[in-house]
Length: 203
Figure (cartoon, rainbow, N blue to C red):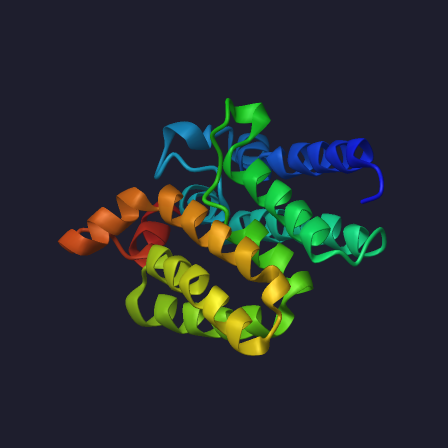
């Protein structure tokens, strides 16, 4: 981080890479579907799985995770600064959620968040992800699992003592909450539809 302009340039590059809407590209290329017009109108892996099938959803998930983990892996070779690594991760996540290619719209950020924190804080992410997966299987609600993951992640990071990544995890938590505000309202009203049901209907 010796040169602020180089750092800003790096973060812009990471943001642009994070902005690549893999879900939209995959859905259009394989099914001729514009994800912004079907299902939840979200470009993330869950909507791809619901509208295009599980294998396309998995491919989207892997690519969106890669958007998070690869820039952070590269960043660790540039600097060990917690601030620099946190900013790199946030740039990738914000790019996914507010894509320059989609007029600042995008996915809900979970896959890219997993990619980022798999590198930055693998232990806390693992336990948060385990609980997330268990909740998704128990309830069928991906949104509930996602919200639980980003809520628990700062707590597990705090317990782990890796406080350098705590602020980034809290920022991500609020970003994800914002993207899930409609899901939160539906969960509160008991109107959120289980993922399995929507998935089965659309494959």
